[in-house]
Image (cartoon, rainbow, N blue to C red; front, side, top):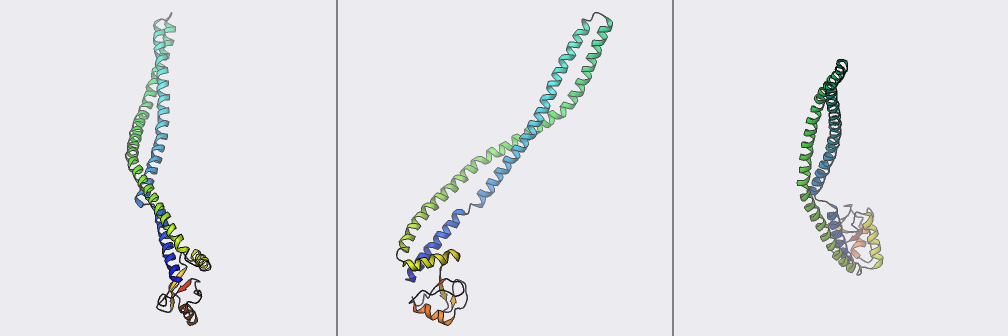
Length: 234
């Protein structure tokens, strides 16, 4: 009876191990995913910087175009002035526009340089991301295939487990499953060296060992509650 229960527990432990294996994503894949997410975050952050600089440069260039047009208009108006006073007024306007243009162009140049640098950094980050993507896709697919294979194997083992459980008396099976749930998956413990519980390593009282050796009834460890099995007697 307990031999059949031991076979069942062996199958249960095998299922537990496979379940644990399925939940353990390969370290290489975890690291690659982290690297990809980090690169994505860097790309997004750099994109914000680039777009902000782009707006500043666009605004400056628009103002430069406007001032250039107004300067040109003032220059043309001064040539068509009806008096020296009117011509002087237009010339002063042209000078003011020219001064402001020079200041604006000097202020815009560093912005353009920063924009170009941000563009280069953004392109480099996107290149890294593009190069990493095929590797990540391949590793994700390999992980998916691994999990599917484990799931298929698990289904076969569950069928085997069900067949083994059918050969264990219902009352014993119920006790075993209750203990197993509370004792890290081990519901049946062998008696070690004829005196110790193989589950908790506590020395068993003599009357408990004698009862377990007889095998007439289900004997449980008084310390951990696991079902005891004397393999020697079995």
